[in-house]
Length: 433
Image 1 (spheres, rainbow, N blue to C red):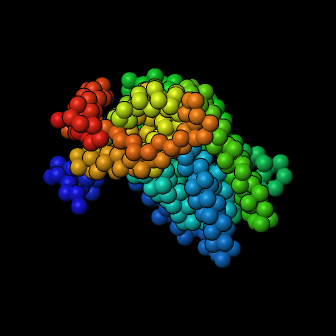
Image 2: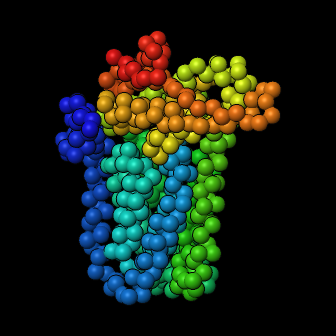
Image 3: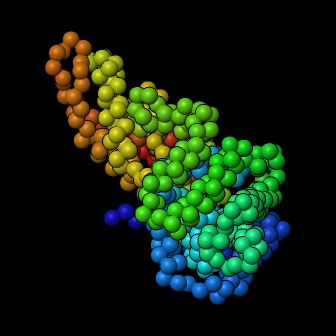
């Protein structure tokens, strides 16, 4: 059993101490703005909770929408994690609006609030793995609730004073106009409040960056339209809902496309992150760790005597070994960790929230998995495949903030620790001091 050091235990417990929450480090005007928005959202929930009765039919619709939202986000988790890395300093355009806007059109206000709460809690736990700043997610949920309230006022006026479900009272050209205006109000209220806080908390960022990508804005507006379509299907032919399941995923891929256009991020031989993108991710995760008061671990892994494999079996065989080792490393890390090809026969692993004894445990687990690699290679001058077993690896470990507080010193320290591991017999882990 590994015992955490007092420093590791203290850092791990910081998230449970309200006095250490990062929200208190915000400038007073920004903090006041966040609190006003959140209190106003709570007031609206309290005022509207009894406006519309909750019926068995609305509970049935609620169940359908909640199931759709959870299934959608679970399917798109990988896409969302990649998108989240590029969202610093700009609005993170999500597609939860599909289900939230559908809920606004169909459900009583208290159930709409529950859909919003479940949606954001689910994404915080499953997509961001609780590494995102919690107060940001709470604020985002509050802005969405206020946006729903503003759009609800439009729907109430446009349907002749009906309190819901609005979808059943939107008929003809007037209904279409009301729906379009309500969708626009929903988007603009949420967007304006989020952009305002981004500008206030990132004064050095250009205003254009805070506005986000135009393509993202258009796709999210399309998502509101899809939400209206889902609301219509649920009221008329609920059994057709699975037919629309591919639409949210297609929109998600559309949101991801600009990030893939920015850079090729995958190493072709190992399917890991390439060095440039891994370094970009490391830089962003370091900023996040500093903001959260958390830790960050880095491992540099080198296959021992890899040159002998290249010399004896050929470079194609070496590539097969690299792929097998890459798979072994991936098997031993969490879904929220980042594994990259660091160059040659070296790999780099980024482990948010891991340091000290925990980091060494992961490193030793990786070494043990590499030692179990058994790969058949097509060697030079051999017709039949040749097995390669008994691989070993040396690992250098460094962590933020114990080793260093900037990325370059962290990488240099991990690299030096790797050199020390190889110089002192190989096949073990050395932690930077």
